[in-house]
Image 1 (cartoon, rainbow, N blue to C red):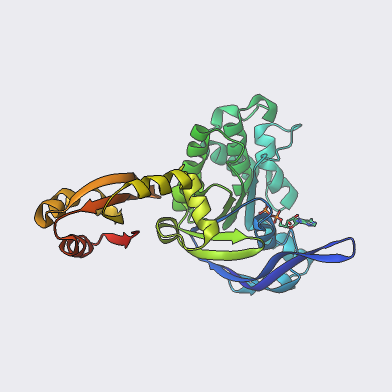
Image 2: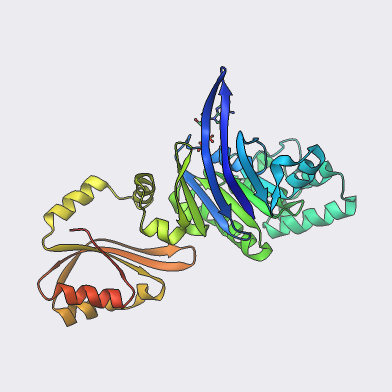
Amino acid sequence: MIEFDQVQKSYQVGGRAIPALHPTSMTVQAGEVFGIVGHSGAGKSTLVRLINLLERPSGGRILIDGENVTDYDAGELRAFRRRVGMIFQHFNLLSSKTVAGNVAFPMKLAGIYSRSEIRNRVDELLARVGLADQAKKYPAQLSGGQKQRVGIARALACRPSILLCDEATSALDPQTTQSVLRLLADINRELGLTIVLITHEMDVVRRICDRVAVMDAGEVVEMGPVADVFLHPRHPTTRDFVFESENIDRDEMQEDLQKASGRILRLTFRGENTYKPLLGHVARESGVDFSILSGRIDHIKDTPYGQLTLSLVGGNLEQAMTALKAADVDVEVLR
Ligand code: ADP
């Protein structure tokens, strides 16, 4: 649905071209939730603002549904922008308009909807985001989570096929973040909307994204299905994000590993395997003793996973590893 073909962007600052996005090729599939994660200044906003042409690329082509949108004239661009909704970290609501007025605003601006169409759509959207009883309030009277729900309703007003989310939960507390992410996931599923979401938190990616691109200094350094990238990060920047999201202190972890004896393995269980009593069974069969150095059981979107770091001593280690692999457990030897 969204295709970047060697797209690049430089900003002119004081007569010099400062690169913000190096030539990048990538594809976002229709209906997926695509995450872009990176530190501040990595180029995430630039990339996402290129999708709706708030920024023009300095080179390359951007294809949406197979059409080269960089060639659009002003009229085509206006129509195209109605197909792309956007929500922001600080909500960007109009303080002088009510909740209903904010949601109606892009439809009025488009100039192609009747008053009754607008009224019905606003009612429908406010019900969808759980704010049916707040229509007459002003943004200042709402909580952060409610403001973002208004932002989402407004972004959906003109029935876009793409929703861009720019750090949409970064100003919200953890519980509100969860409920907003759940709403986005529901909308993605029910409306088949394609969502591109930029964030500096891997945890947001883990909760709702299907695929992720990791950005560093204007480049996509790693890209793939969230489970692959999250459970087996390859690039140092990706590793930093994963460790950070799991609250792992690397120095402490190294110390723990040094104290442990025997072989050290990291086991990754995915899906139903997460709940099976595999480890005890394998330990009994192979005579290997194990102690758990670190571990986590959680979900990546709807799929459960477990990741354990173990030290193993005695018994038949080869037999234990073979049995685990045969049961579809990823086995990495750390030492
Ligand atoms: P992120 O969203 O990951 O924080 P940005 O895309 O905002 O990163 O920025 C990428 C780089 O481009 C940064 O070095 C930033 O300073 C620069 N940049 C972004 N917008 C502009 C602009 N309008 N003019 C000049 N430089 C910019």
